[in-house]
Length: 159
Image 1 (cartoon, rainbow, N blue to C red):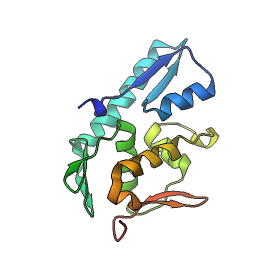
Image 2: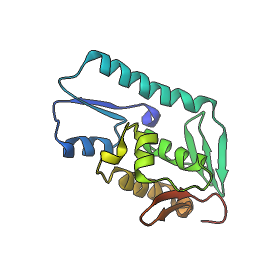
Image 3: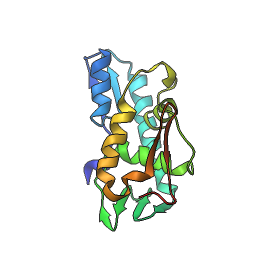
């Protein structure tokens, strides 16, 4: 039930490793103290916008994988898959681009909201892809690594 609730970490830990770990464990955003109240409000609004955007989106299906963006639910073979909000957004982003390859930078910008992800050196995307594959079990093969480029979702043929 609470997997779809957004998490914003507000902390005094400003080191890059702390920010990366916070995002890798599932935070939707990470704000370091001291912070501007206007920035906090803007970040909360951005997270809520991303959540609301999913309410008008269709149900997508590939093999036994079914993703209902409006209800924020994923199922494999009719069994619910417990995804974090970030994992769900990542899966939906990959499914929406119809087999196109997305780089880590593109995924960091689209899913995590980094304005210039080319400057971020992080394995966050890789860690989330790994966890997503583990949870998708029989349909994990649909998320394909394109070495040196990024990731794509194969709606046809992969299992």
